[in-house]
Image 1 (tube, rainbow, N blue to C red):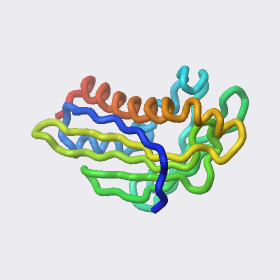
Image 2: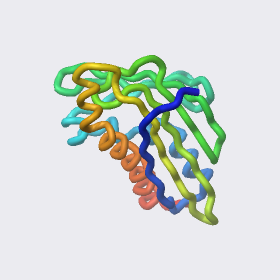
Image 3: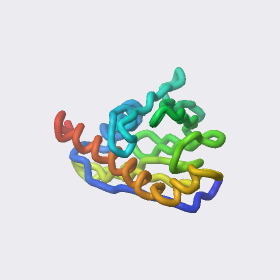
Length: 167
């Protein structure tokens, strides 16, 4: 397993049982909803997710994102490397992603039941892009982007369960 020199994570209590939180976040369309919405961090652009037949719900499942920011194509291919229903899921990049501020990475979620709620941790471990302008942008903005991603994923889960209720 590759070691990554940089990391970020976000932890929060979700007002829903752990198995329901896992089920919701195991669907990468829900987990990655922030990538499909126009935002300032994406400079007003958005990315489209693609999933394999397993829907990124099994070890070895492949998925990723494609899009463009300011007309410059971006893409990343990922594979699920660990999946323990109701507890942990990890995925990582395949090859070198074509992103502006981060290079190869490993992301994941960990869920610990706490009575009728769950402690959710979303994390990313990453490297900077290999060279050029993306590496410079990574030095400047990589940490902020990594924190934005983990914060958005946790925040989207909190909002979902606040809206629908945890039970």
